[in-house]
Structure formats: C-alpha cells, structure tokens
Length: 260
Image (cartoon, rainbow, N blue to C red; front, side, top):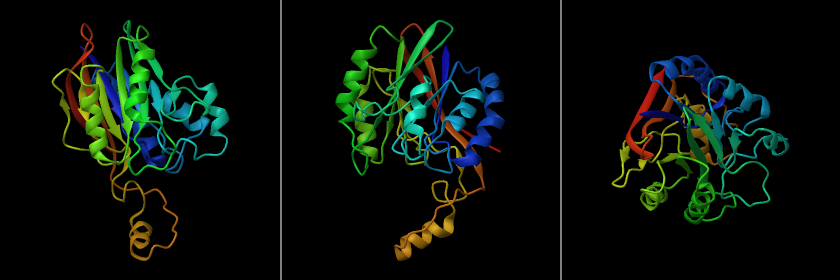
C-alpha cells in the first residue's frame, strides 16, 4: 500500500512553522510515500514567493499546489516558471505562466497532481473545472500511475459534484479553499477517495486563519480592514489516502489533524 498526505491550505508563518516542525516525523511515523501541500496562503496569508516555496519543499513536501491567491505576490509570475514542483490551477487561461500539473514518483509509482478552481462564488477567470479535468486526465494518460485532483472551490455542491463526476477515473478528489475540515471523507463506489475540504494548516484561534477582531468588525460595519494572520491553536490539517498500487484505486481516506 502507498500512502499520500495532502496538506490543506498553509496559512502564514504559523502554518509554515508547524509543517517544518511536524512533517519529518509524520513522514516516518505514517510511512508516507507522497506529501503534497496547498501553499497559496503562505506569504502572510495571501500568495507565495519563490523563497517560501523552496522552504516548504525543503521541509519534506514533494509538490505544491496553488489556488485563487496564486498571483497575489508581486513577481511570482516570473518566479513560478523556474519551479517544476509547483503547479498553478489548470483551468486558468493558457496564457498564465507556470505548470498546470506536477508528477512525483516514489518506489517506481508515479502520481500526477493538478488543481481546478471552482467557478461558484470565485473571482478568478477560470474555465469549467469539469471539462478541464476531462482534458487533464486525457493529457496525463501514460504519464502517471495515479491521478489526484484538488478542487479549490467555495461551494460544497460544486466539490461534491466533481467527486462523483470523476469517480473511478482518478484516485482522489480533495477539496481546499474554505479552510474548515469536513466530516465527509469517503471512498466513492468506483474507488475514488473524496473529501470536501481537507482543512487549513495554520492558526484556528481566528477566522479562517486571520485575527478575529478586524474580521468581525468588517462584518458589522463593512469598512476595509487589514486582516493579520492569527497566532493561536496552530494545527496541521490534511487527508491521508491509502492507494493500492496494483489498481491505482483508493482503499482508505482519513482526516489528519496534528496540533502543536
């Protein structure tokens, strides 16, 4: 059995620190073959830089995915092209720089990973995630033994629908973006592991990783506020997927939560 850990949205320095502290031990204790992480919020909660991407990879992460904050940091559009273990969402316009997938290999087994952005309540210009997934699966035939899809989306219905749409065609469909882990981890009937949201890696004593007071104030008066990254109750959250190497099917999926 092969084991893959997908780490949910890493938020700011607290998220980066807990990955650095806990991941080396987790790789050994859980006998992890693959570790993939969404790192679109590592730069003070919004975006990523080359320096921070390399620091995440140096912690033992095999590949990094991104979401709707992909272009938040100035200069990242030129830095991303030199990082072949980082991929931007696959359903962004083709003119966008960067890789639309990554492939990692361990023990002679190749896992391809790509992300699609949802379109419900999301602001980035993106193609249909369902049709993009079709295209990517066709493109990756013969290049990988298993395919893992991240759906970075706001609407739970859109995530769940994509899971059923891809059941039996990919090894896992894992949701991110809402920063709250869901209780629906399961293996769908045709062998695809699914979870609506794998949660956030960062400070839970806040509002989606940000300090409470300015967020509450913004809801009350609507005035612009600076949302600093919170500090308390830091957790690493993700999903562990057991993969059958002979069938490339998921045998099991579980939420993983690690506290400091």
